[in-house]
Amino acid sequence: MTLQAYLSRRVVTPEGIRPAGILVKGEQIQAVVTPEQIPASVEMHDFGEAAILPGLVDSHVHINEPGRTDWEGFETATRAAAAGGYTMLVDMPLNCLPATTTVAALTAKRETARGKCRVDWAAWGGVVSDNQADIEALAGAGVLGFKCFLIHPGLDGFTMVNEQQLRAALPHVARTGLPLLVHAELGGSVDAATAALGGADWKSHATYLGSRPDEAELAAIRLLISLCRECRFRLHIVHLSTCEGLPMLRAARAEGLPVSVETCPHYLHLAAETIRDGATLCKCAPPIRSRENREKLWQGLSEGAIDLVVTDHSPCPPPMKKLEEGNFKTAWGGIASLPVALPVMWTEASARGFALSDIARWMAEGPARLAGCHARKGRIAAGCDADFVVFEPEAEFVVAKERLHQRHPVSPYLGEKLRGVVRATYVRGKLVFAEGRFPGEPTGKEYRP
Ligand SMILES: [Zn+2]
Image (cartoon, rainbow, N blue to C red; front, side):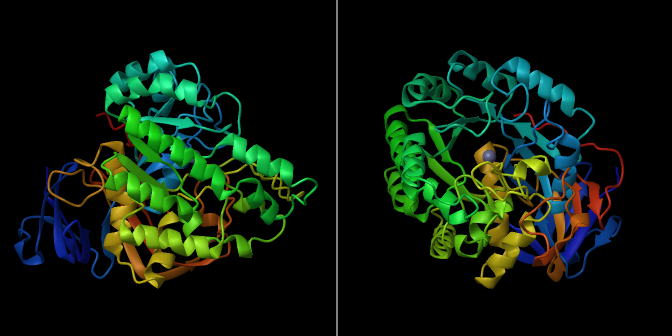
């Protein structure tokens, strides 16, 4: 096995950004050295001024396979991931058929994924109304944690949990030591807000926003923190959209509770004030809130109150976005962004004075830590998998359909000028994306703890 050296003036390591050579043997990083320390005998890949970041890890992706390959699938989701600089995805347990709520469903998922993946992947298991007895078995079979909903998830087949059902599940979850990822909105608040809207115009995003108030998120977070205090499980709040949740979450952490939180590029980039009538490509749940709220989410990231940024890549067949009617009530809620999430984030982050090391912390190391795979994923360091992305931070491009490598090239970002271009992506030392192409056979595999 020849020793390979990947050289750049800007290698993003946990210790900072510096000129370095990443020495790779087989699938692993053997050492990160100064350019002068690179042995003469190596095969050299010199990327000059282009930055090398750790391969991004997305712990919130809806791959939708088996069962809904007309929505997405392993082949297209992992291709989109490779193009976006992601080297590992963790798949959400819903929207696929069967939902990943039993070991048999996990086995079916593994079978369908075989031979299709361009990047590595792993699975979250579902906690639903009636599968308390499956939780520990799923952990034993290799899921990295669990996901549940406190509100109807938008699609039948994956049931939400009420407080009583959640209480029945929590001792099982706590025994596994794995995190429970929770969609934190309470149905009661949403139903009441929706009823109060009466005959409002559902072409307007303001109507949709009104139907999912901050209070729906806050009430759910309040409940979850108190359950976390009582049952001591690892609580993770997915896609926080309201900045008003931050003080509560900060206080929970100060109290020593094992609580973490994520947000998504769309909450950090879009703003309710600029969403046009009928622009249902911007529909997601919880909703995009105000510009002022967005800036406070950035502040939360800056202060470490928000741990990580993930895509919540959730595609659907284009007709389900109801673009003709432009109806925010009936359109599918979900934004697919794997191929552009890094430039969306970098455009916003660099404008606010953040560095590539912040991006690496939020989008690689943070999600890897949540998923428990940080010993091997999410960092450029000796002993880790040779997963990295070659990124040109100063280059700009306009988002066109050709760049959207997911199944359906549908996106609220189409036509936008973004900063930062992914030149190449490596997974365990193998080139999986370069200059718009996907060389070789798919060799991505499941990460098993
Ligand atoms: Zn989701």
